[in-house]
Image (tube, rainbow, N blue to C red; front, side, top):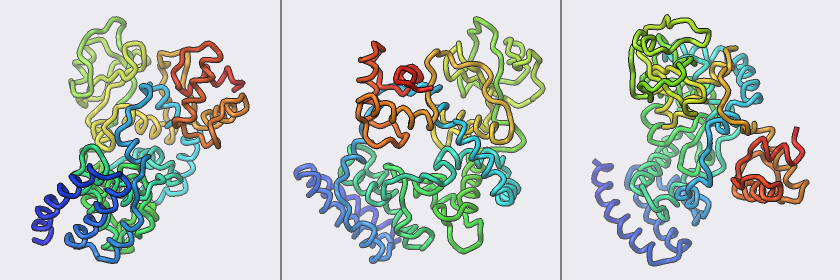
Length: 399
C-alpha cells in the first residue's frame, strides 16, 4: 500500500518539480528535484540514511544528458562493431575465464539450461569479464535523467527508486553502483528493475550481488536468458550460403522451416543441405554482399538483452570462438575494416604523434578522437568521417 499510495503523490510532486526546473538553471533545478526524490524514496520504503547518502552530492552532469540525447556522429557499421567487441584479446580472455570459472559456469548451465559459452560471452561484451563496468555513479546518473533529462523521465525515476531499494535491502553496497549513463550496473549490466525481478543469489551468501560476485552475475544472466526464451535444445544459429540474386524473405521475424529454406536455395557453407529441424529466420546484417545467418528463437533471446542485431551477433560469435568454434567465414563487404581495441589505442597514440591531439590514449573513441580522425582524414585526402578505420590507421603509420 505504501508503494502504491506514494507513487500517485510522488508523480504529482515530480511534475511540479520538473515544471520549476524548466525555469531555473540546470544546476539549481537539479538540487530541488533531488531533494524531492529523497523524500519519495523514503516514502517508497528506502531507509532514510540510504536515500540521503546515495543522492547527496548529485549535481547536474552534462555528460549524462548529452549521452541521453546525442545522435551518433556516424552509423556504426557492423564490421566496426564486431572488430571492437569480438577482438583477439576478448577471445583470449574468454578462453582463460572459461577455465578459471569452469565449475561455476557448468553449475549455471545445469541449473538454468543456458549454454555456458553464451553466458560467458555476455559477460565479456557487457563488462570485459568484469574489468570495466562503467564510470557513472548510478543514482546520480539516474537523478540527472529524471530531473534534467528530455525523455522517459517516469521510466528513469522507477529505475532510480529500484536502485535505492536494492541498496536499502543490502544486496549491493551503496558505493558499488557504478555503471552506464542510463543506469545499468554490475558485471553483466542489469538495469535496476531487471535486477529486482531476475537477479539471483547463486553463491548462497544471502545477497544478490552482481558487482562483486561472479557466480551471482553469471547465474543472473542465465536466468535472464532463460526467461527470455533461450533453450539449449537449439543452436543460436549458423552461417549459411545464399544463392546469388536471392530475393526471397529475410529478416529476424520471418521464421520458416529448414526444408523451406532448402527449397529457397540456401545451403550450409560447404554446400550441403541442412540437418537441423528448427524454425529459423534469415538475417543479412551487412546486406546482400556480406555474411548471412539462419537464426533460431535463441537469437531473439540474445536480442532481448540489448535490442540490436549487431549485439546479438557479437554475443553469438564470441561464444563460438571462446569454445573453439569457427569465425565468420564470409568477408564483410568492405575494403576498409574496423579496428580492434588494441588498434584503437594505437590509433590514438599515432594521432598524438602526428600532431592531432586527442588527449590521453585509452582505446575509447569519443568526441576528441573523432575530431582528430577527421583532421587526419582531411590532411590525407580521405573522405572525412571521424571513423576509426584501417585506412586512417595505416596512413598514420599503423601496422
